[in-house]
Image (cartoon, rainbow, N blue to C red):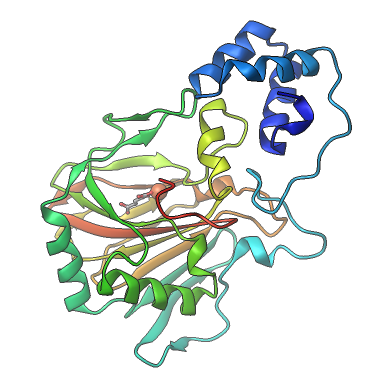
Length: 294
Ligand SMILES: O=C(O)CCC(=O)C(=O)O
Ligand SMILES: [Fe+2]
């Protein structure tokens, strides 16, 4: 495979690895671990030899969140303009809004019965949550994330479809950019340690994920129950703790006002001290995320 045929994210990663002084076998090793075929060797060789042609410009669904000229709004996504969003079937309130990072807390996003139904339909399906290993691309279980979870394909049933349609109308982001809704259950003493929801594009293990729908650009966490103690969504770099409240939704997008990935969005699910915690999460991509692309 020719270097020029690779997608720009992968080109960029290989260029970066070469510039960092990695030798051909180290680069190949990382790529093979990330699931690429040996046929990529020719492209790596070309890059090593400096025969890469002109730098390709990143397509819309690139691994980076880059500011399009003069406008970062496509990447920052939802920024509230009113205090109440009347969606007809539901009035969603804005309870908190922060500009940098772009964080919005929604009230009245889900009804009590929607929250309860989501929990009930997930109970039997829960499996230990996994983390993406950004070096190898594998999905690993570990103590950084001790919740249990499951997910529902887009439009999997009328309840999921209704919630997805509400999210689409509220945020103004096409539903086909959404990943499947994931439901997570944290028992007492479990947590999800601080992390980024975007996939650092310079890591070989993230190339496969980025190829499907492009970079993640935003998260919407929907709280499905009230938690007795602990279990906040914590943003340690900005000293913010959002306490879970049934029916509320926490939205944040990862591009700062310059359109670059904002590392202030580091966040986690802090340990549940008493009781249990249930959330449902919708992540949004820069491009279309095809159902089945998990
Ligand atoms: O549990 C939380 O509040 C945060 C969950 C989270 O960060 C995630 O699922 O990516
Ligand atoms: Fe997260």
